[in-house]
Length: 386
Image (cartoon, rainbow, N blue to C red; front, top):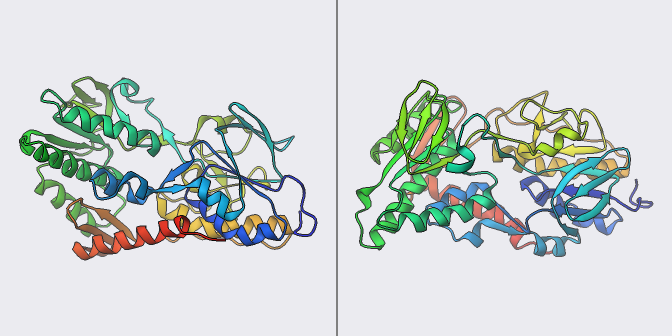
């Protein structure tokens, strides 16, 4: 497919994730040269995960952390189909959709994120709130706040997951629910917060960051249950593999996620968590006409943890390689950095940061820096004009 003789179907993006919104803006000029682009999206706005803790803490409005895909599609000349994908017919080169005719493609890119995998925690589907996908979580967050505002509402709040996302979530909930109580004239000290993690606290980060995270949690009286794998969630407690019980009125899960189940029927090579196995060019190891990025992609040659920083960094390479494939020009490799900046909001106007095995810091200036980075990234898509 070339710019001068493009096939009819062009490039199709499945999912409005962090990498794909960058493809839309970067391909805007290429589309004018004859490469049609289609976005298939289940939701018409896409949340930016980097600003989620700030929203939970009450520092950002809901609309401030979302990218309006309708506006972005219009500004970039992208055809938008509002539907959920549920399969791929690789022989026919079509994407199957719920409640919509199949969509044909010449090149396909997948950036659909991850979904909760609660299979190893009995009762989680009934008694817990999963953080991913974020859109569904935001609605349930408001339900939790409303319930916690009642005199008989939940008071013992438990977050399962000791990575950076779980830490940010428990700190944000601590700030928001206490602020809600104080505003309503109730005792903000009436809550008990706990973080439960199967591994040590933020195990992939350096010792300086880990110490600062532990201090932030201790300063707020948040109990940490480390190396405690949760196997069951009941209406009033969680139970660990060791048989211990932790009292809980509300449980939020920030771990155990995997790629959407429908990818398993595509015939593509997948990682153990169901993610699409990709090479350095972000092409599927099975089918070079299919690319994937973000949490639903597994970089086989250079495995990395699931982190938004990689989806953000993949975006420009993904756009460049899709254009290159369409035009028959050479592709570039994506080389994920081994040392990347970590910024953890503590929901009090401060943040903890670090990079690599040694560097760690914290303070109000770190939050100001994180806020600036996040707002600047979002403005790229909210203020875009072709």
